[in-house]
Amino acid sequence: MSRAAAALLLCCGAAAVVVICESITLCGRDPQAELLANSPLAELQTGALSNQQPSQVKVSYVTSFWAEPDDVEHHPHRLEIRAALLMNILNPHFDQIVIFLDGATEDANCGHFLNGMRELSGNLGVVSVNQLDPFSRVTCVDVNTGQPTYYQMFKNAVSDHVSGDIVVLANADMAFDDTMSLARRLDPEVLVVLGTRGFTDRMPLNVKNLYHTIVGTDYMTNIIPKKKGGGGWDLDWCTLNKESSWDTWIFHKSKLGGVKGRQHFMRRNIKKELVPFYLNEMGAEHAGMWAVQRSYPFTSVHNACERIHSWSFHLTTKKHHERSPPWPARGKAARVPRPWGGLKDVEGDPFLPM
Image 1 (cartoon, rainbow, N blue to C red):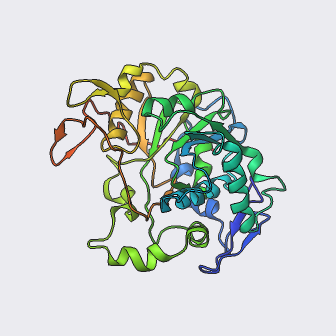
Image 2 (image 1 turned 90 degrees about the vertical axis):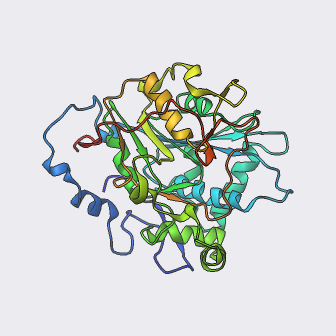
Image 3 (image 1 turned 120 degrees about the vertical axis):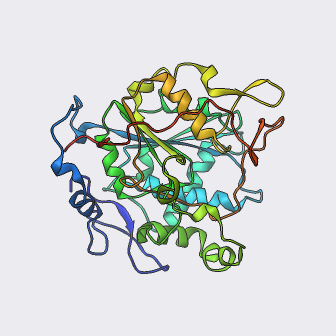
């Protein structure tokens, strides 16, 4: 395959060993070859093509993380996120990784964060990907404000810090595998979202092993089985409810260059005040979809989670954004109010032929 030499985990159980491979073939399998073999691409009629060949198109992964000094007690989810970030830093299908570091201070900023990530990578034995420092593709941006709103995340995604033609905007605890190679062939007029595949037995061994190596297996073997009814964070939402659940947005940067209408990314709370909403709020992705659809008239919107897989590194306690005053109650829970946007024209293929 054309994008060779990735740092991957050998499939040898939980005691995984990190090696530098000369191809992305894993345990005798070539995931991309299997993906293409099972794809209907060969049957596609020739459609509208981008001006660029897929090999020329650059893909940027964009997310946000929060800054914390090293000498404080960290929430266990922080380590899960660092594991997901490292997985994506080592993913050869991203040309750039952009991390907006919220709440940066003199004692906790991009310099400290990147040093910690390099140390984490070094502890796994990873020194290069394709004979290059994997962190040479990382752009970290210090942000002095707190958690970004939905509007700010999209503004970040189309800012000058992002150099890719295609943007993959996602929650920081989403880890991606080799199926991300398809993003490079996204039709410019199509918006793609991804519902998470959760943390399930379908997860590739190299992804699961990285989680086990960095975070440990305690949540898999001891905590989750004892929880009454299990936990929703490890479910495959692509199978359960792909029409209304997604954590990742993929689009051509040029189409959302303006991110028009800040007011579209705001709703009225219980006091009738017009306020912004955040990623980890109930219903936020639906309100965000409506706002994005006001910014550019995409011909179609697809949840392509069956084609590009995102895996949730979130087995620790889940917590939603605490809002005061709250949104108006809707059913059993307060959600970001309507208008909501949804998927449209889910027929067809969002990816251009090779």
